[in-house]
Length: 205
Image (tube, rainbow, N blue to C red):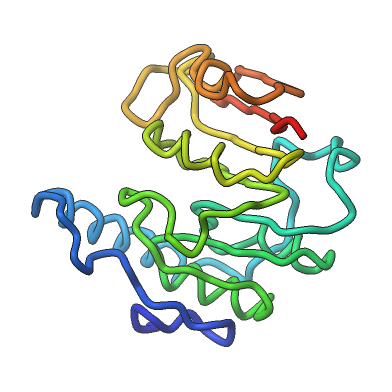
């Protein structure tokens, strides 16, 4: 298994998931448990498959030709790899070094960051980005940082679990959560159904 700072053949980035962390021990233990859980899942998965973000399928024309992109909670990096193969400069962030190693094997040109998102975005990923993607990871405390990372004209692409069409739960967005969280952005598309919520939104020029 890769060490904390080793994410395969791509660039090596220091693991900042626990260093000088002011949070209570329980929070740190939760982050370690998340890492172990996702490492276990990624260790038995197949090769990374490049794919656009779900919320962008059929709307790829909204993308500029190229630019700088951030993939938050990237998992095995399928979205990051999809953008990198189209010439984008990509930063990808996740708590699991095993997942990142799979992504790095497919796209070593991506900069892969091992990081606990409970501490916010890595300082290296403050932006500005032309596209910010966060797919199937929900932390409302992170919403302001996602918006702040956008360059003028930048596109935000979000997909989270939702209570709409499913049961309520701590990992699911309440009805209208995404639409209300980004009032400063122009909303291009928003949907809530079948236990999923998506938002495509753009920062003004």
